[in-house]
Image (cartoon, rainbow over all chains, first blue to last red):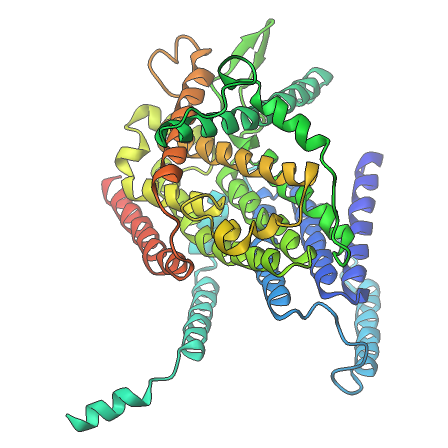
Amino acid sequence: MPVIGTIFYTFLAIVAVGSALGMLINRNAIYSALFLVLNFATVAVLYLSLGAPFIALSQITVYAGAIMVLFLFVITLLGAEKLPGYEPIKGHRLVAIVLAFVFIAELVLFFFFRNQVTGPIPLIGPEFASPKNIGVLMFTEYLLPFEVVAFILLSATVGAIMLTKPERKVTTKLSQQQD
Amino acid sequence: MIDAALIWEWIIKSLVLILFLTVGFMYVTVYERRFLARIQSRIGPNRAGPFGLLQPAADGLKLIFKEELIPTNADKFIFVLAPIITVIPALIVLAVIPWGEAMVIFGRQVNLFISDVNVAVVYIMAVTSISVYGITLAGWSSNNKYALLGGLRATAQMISYELALGLAFMGPVVLAGSLSMLDIVRAQQGSLWYVVLQPAAFLIYFFASIAEINRAPFDMPEAEQELTAGYHAEYSGMKFALFFMAEYIKMVAISVIGATLFFGGFDGPFVDQIPWLGPIYLLAKVVIYLGVLIWVRATWPRIRYDRLMQLGWKIMFPLALLNVIITAVVVVLVS
């Protein structure tokens, strides 16, 4: 890898990890949300540098443009930007520390016991990550997972509509009984 | 192949685009005020320079010398950041628009676009989807209830209309079979303009884009009568000028995108023989499109907030979805 590539990658990595830490540590929910947006944007730039502009822009549109905007909307709507200093769930810090150690152990195991024989990385053309290729793959080779995801999302949408639907008024029922 | 000359070419083209947008912003304000005045049987600003053409310079000078206020309990960092976040997406969204065919300038072949990526339409979607941050953050950080309400309204409105906007893009994309703006323009050169082939998509784009940039009749986030000035109620001086600038640059941007997607972009008679005509045709279409935007503002009253959300979710979104399905089926059947 040329030197400039290494510098570029290091910079992105530092920003990505730094923004993730900032999101965890900050006690103001608005700042946390903005750090998360920065994190998503940095990951999108990483995708872009790997030659996948479609994935990068989808990442920005979906995560930064839709999901985080909704998060920000809810935080400002509820006025919940000040996070409480105490633990909402008892003992969750202890569990988190244990889980973090498990994760680090997994990483170490992966590094030592992974498949050591690595062949040459197959070269991919500039058309590999084009929207056309992604679309074709999605509707041929990965059709079943795609449809399953679509079905789950649809049922979630219907569920959300059912939950927010106002209950039927009693007066209409009474008038129906009188008829 | 990347050489020094190519990098200079990119820099010069980017500067030309930014200059076009900022100068365009100045003259769109004059255009709007003069045209609006004519519709309302007034004269409008005509004192500074010939025909009032120096009015934006006078306004700019005034705004620079105004006192900048930051409310006591505002979140200062985000309060300063919000206008900047609002302007940047407006300035970068047009980077994927082609202005004409390749031309030879000073013995060098120059493409009249900054970048012809194969995901141009997704890029436009991505940039418009992040442009809501500035407004939301401005509303929240001002620590003012009117500003907060304006910011919340803007967020809800922009999320609602983004869906219809994205689906309206899909009509031309499906017809042209490409996400690149240059391919969409070339496909229109071969056939009719997409406003003829995709009238539903164009109408949805037209209204959804007005809602997306918060202009009348969808200017709920800054409705003066109920919210003083909405999200920028606490801003003054240059920071207010940046919000003002972003609004007008977005107007230019949606006009350019609309003209490119639905009115053939730089296409016009004799453009294949004289490539210089390309940018001129595009500019002419943009000026007409802007005129229609101003006309709509002058003649339609603001619609009520709940009706705005109903229009977005219950009419425009299903209509846009139906349009995409019908277009896709027709394209498959014809080809």
